Image (tube, rainbow, N blue to C red; front, side, top):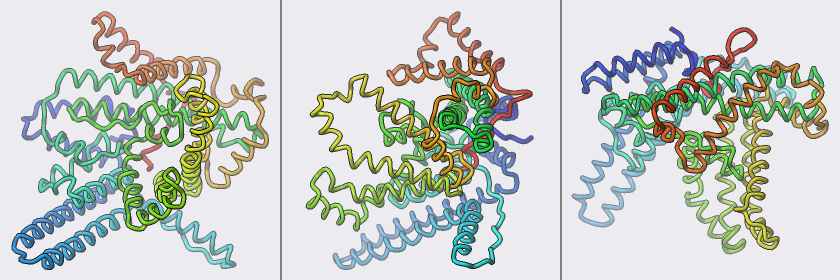
Length: 535
């Protein structure tokens, strides 16, 4: 059996029900092992022998965490026997240095594996380009490695685990099975979210029995995710693939490029958030609360807020393990202190923050893919967020002078639309085939912009007919209505669950039937592969 997506017959109709059945009939003490075995079987289905990398990473962080705990215990014992302050200081310094070497080794070896498997062809290709510019005609052959699906996700989880042990946020777990299950839990291994050890490890190992409420809510979440992916993302994939592939051959105007960027952004959101709905629903069925990864991102009023609502677990990972360590380093603290004296309270902290933002967005761009277009994607958001931070004090003063209330609907609507447009332009770079494509698309967008192609029938030549457009509008309206309810603090699932059974079940059946009837499969449709599984 080959599982290519969480929203597939192999996963939803065979693998997940089988895992739930075994989990239910097995005694409580054995249930964690059912999840562990199921997770490794799942990983074998998606990556086969490349499972060796996951095993190595798991053993690596497990042993290094135990080593860190051993050093901490040793330090405590030595400090209790120390007789002077000088001796205590020497013990702390020596022990801290040893722990730092361990954490550096753990991070380097795991990131190095990711870099070699995922980025070495890109690095060699870039080096060859640089050599050609330098007049060297000989080129290095790009290496070819097979990387397991989801390596970027479980690598970040591995780094967070040993880092949190080092910072004493958690203790090193002596149970290898629990660490292995945290690293490999099958609903999250392919596309995330990126979990922390404190989020899921002990819930996964508790072996709690299945509950009716969890099963119902999990099934609801899965059904909603399937609608997003099958009805919207897969249907839009035909248009988006054609638009971005042939934009030069068909001499598109900027309006059609913009439409392609908007629809690709919608497709990406529906595919990724839909898959995360299935992931969270699957975990919920087993009584495991998986962190939310999206919080109505298209209601954001700034790019910074957007990235607090989109791929939340990746953003918080970069915040905690890159942004904060950079800004709180000794050098950055000194820089901030000097800048406060010269630039004042508003602008003093910005230089250190901008340096940290650069590190975050360089890593964010590369994490999303090995290509210059992804680096451009990262730098695009770095510039926007940095500019936003720089002009915020001035913007506040201007709004106050003009008596414009940020909380009133007209201004909020303007900022939401502005942010959505900037996001779509960024995603256009993200979906390009390279840096040259990104530049060309931007050139067409800004130098040949007209809305002519929106109204002359060009849109209907790219894979979507009027019936597709009607179905898309209905499905997007459903997703938008759910988003508005959440934004207002109303839980759609709880609202539906509180309705009488003769109302509740028709809603469930309508959701399932709408997805089954109008899902984009069959002749003419190519279901989109899991986009984030490749990251």
